[in-house]
Amino acid sequence: MKKVLLATQVFCLMLLLMAARPFAEVELIKKRVLSERVEILIPKGFEVMSEQQMDFNYAKAQSRPSVIYTNNKEASIAFSYTDNTADQDMIDMYSDNFYKTYAKQFKEAKWFNHGVKEVNGRKVGYMELMKPELGHEVYNLIFFTDVEGKLLMCTFTCADRQKPEWENVAKQIMSSFKANS
Image (cartoon, rainbow, N blue to C red; front, side, top):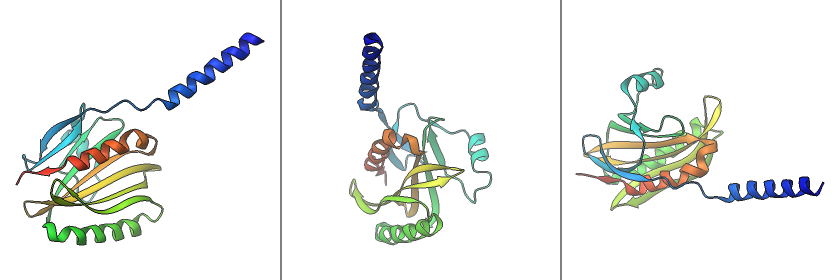
């Protein structure tokens, strides 16, 4: 009986230690994307999603991202270089409009933060939320700014259960953004 009790205590201690262990550090590497217009950190091991996979994933969408980096199982970061005119003076307006639109469209979303911040000398709007998507919750960090007179939107996405591992990484990615203009 004492052996069973001791084994149970050891097992519980191991579970506690494993739960308290921080997630493995995600290594970020510098990438130039969108024909070298943007420099940003991307998690090592993330690859550009194939055209076929993008066509499949966005078959019913009104528009699809320009490029998506993914590790094919947990997370992705999508870049949408739009035709919308944008400059630094318009970022606050875009931020307000996007927030109102998303809050109206995703009434059941859980909001963590939204606004405008300075990143490497540029205004960058952002929205951080958890929203339902295809029957489950998805963590999104959406950030946007102007690049060469057009609006660039970046969306980091992962499943809700992966948020603890990827939230900090998503914020590091946003903080690394640099436009090469």
